[in-house]
Length: 445
Image 1 (cartoon, helix red, strand yellow):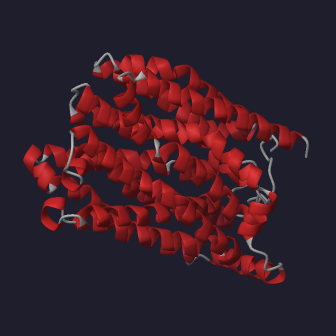
Image 2 (image 1 turned 120 degrees about the horizontal axis):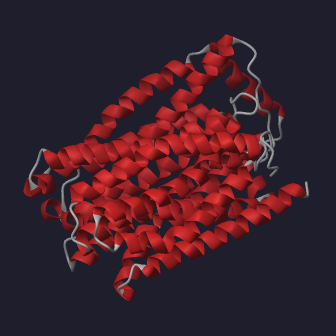
Image 3 (image 1 turned 90 degrees about the horizontal axis):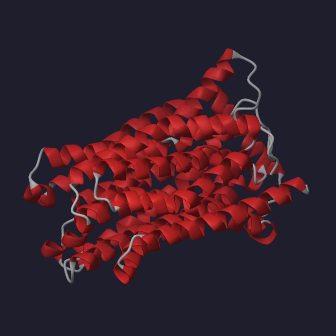
């Protein structure tokens, strides 16, 4: 992995005509919109898990036991993500990126709507949590398939020297998804009282996800009809026809498994910390510290808005001075700020909680901006979907998926948020070591 702006295997396409420029912007816009819709659908589950799902689908036991069960279901979706990445990676590396993205959007829309319509434990008994877990698994498969397709649509068609910026457009799907999910939940809470919210208000954000998906599907179809993208698909098919039928997954596992795990290790702290401040802190501040739900959701919304600026800014900087420097700076910042963040949260002051999580979100954005381009540059085109997706989803499983669950366990076991800070610091150390090894491998090539 070279730290130069153009580092990495694969070809970066140079813009030569206004028509090509418009086509690439259209592709990047479609990829970003698909990412935003997918992440919105995914995040509404995390918010609902922190607020209501424990009581509605896992009613037995204490309040913390119900939350643990809900967060365990939240984590199940992450465990399914590598499966989505493997399936879509195999087919996406052989058949093209777009069909897998369409499939991922369809799966996510069906699963999210299904959760919004799902009866509770009180209505259908044990079938309710079983179906909830099943639909969460489908969500996990969908988002595991989506990220690689959207990321490669953007980065593989980026103009020369702008791969980081184009990749960051897909990364913006995360804060856009968070902002939209929090906004819809805030609206649902404002329009209902507590009993109405528990009865049906929480379902509205899940059902809204389907309406946004229809819009994304429409724009996605329009992009597919452009001549430039059809020609790109045709060239990909011709290349695959002349290439050995060797499985991309087999190639990655046999020859690049170390790179996959290093990529995952480098990113786990980012995804873990993100879900801690978006989902775990929501539960901790409302259930343990007695802070108001709407106020905490508003903080999450505001810090996500700042990421809309910081993510593309860090990506643009990585195009100029290199991915590694920016990426490592973000990881180091998360390690240094973990303890101060929880000290501020524990004051029970909304202002100080906002300051603590805002600074954390800045370091997350610094890492997240160049991450798509960085992962794309770790693998050659014929295995890029598979390799990049696996690296990302490994981080998601061992970082993000388990983080809210681990946070509740650590708080229950130790009674102090400093244990959660130590967890973040440990993941940050793993990230910095992984980044250093990846940089060393790149310099030896």
